[in-house]
Image (cartoon, rainbow, N blue to C red; front, side, top):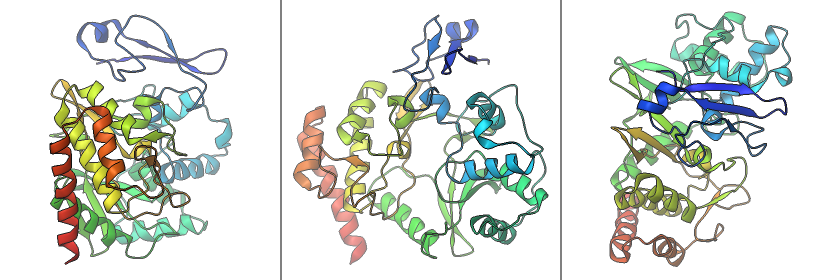
Length: 352
């Protein structure tokens, strides 16, 4: 179904209007910022340079942006001159979640898979070292991973007929980063977090099954960044904000407890790369839910701090800060402490 129309205003920011059929039978794609109303919404100038958070989620970041910009340059186009609308058109049908954008511009990237896993690694490393990559291989890389976010190189692949993401080391990563992230996914599952299926390919490449794809269809996804208009490029949230948003959006204390458990894990497992795009919500089965956890690994964060503060504390969060967050948003104190202790026990057991 057509959700709506996006256009650029004379002042620069984007405008959005829901389609009349979507107003009758659809749902709000961003409940806090784009309620299901018959009106023209205009995006704020910040934090997404005149874009709406929900559509900013669709744009590639980090590795995906690098691939797209390299291909633009190959075609004689200056990336700085490409508008947000043009970049959404480049996303087309390949973005995360369920949103698709038309008219679609492919830049000649709609070609079959041509690179095996070993070839992908070779071409990715060439890009990271700023060496020349053959045009046909660059086009394949864009098609495989040009809509992805995050700093680490990654591609979208079919494994056993299902949609997966496979990650590769960035230049600054330790060589065993794939094994580290796989181990964290196992630890998180043991700690009671909802985690997608994960695998370690060739003993070193981390792969995770996509939770925004199911039975050949797509599931709408909205990051905390997009939901709350919070930049992921610098610390902009507290876990109090995340749990409050989870309660308000899902209207379910169990979903807020899922976010609380994730906070406990991030603190105790020293994952400080907990920025606003590393938390998401799914519109699934007619309701909003906290998404499965993802992008979990040991990280020192910016300046040794959590990107998302724990009750105002980012450097040295302790049990009192964790429980204070639960108390502030109204979670049951006994259940919260039990969740905290179960995460601690799982991590302690894994080290023994």
